[in-house]
Image 1: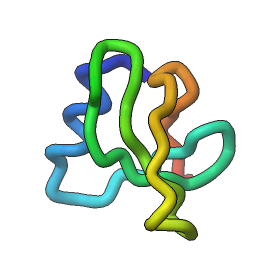
Image 2: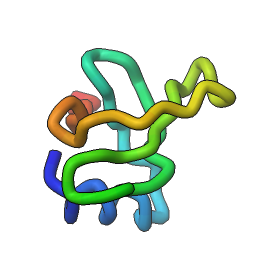
Image 3: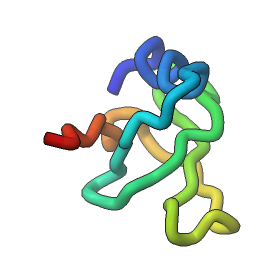
Length: 61
């Protein structure tokens, strides 16, 4: 995922489904052009810094 799309998802008023290597996550912030702070939706206390390349939008259809 590119940095701009990650920022759009963070600013979105609706929940956009995002996964990190198959795990549903919430993007908390974009740290720089390569990394973001996320947490898994089932472990909201487990914040991680990950590569933006591992994030992708999950198509709900």
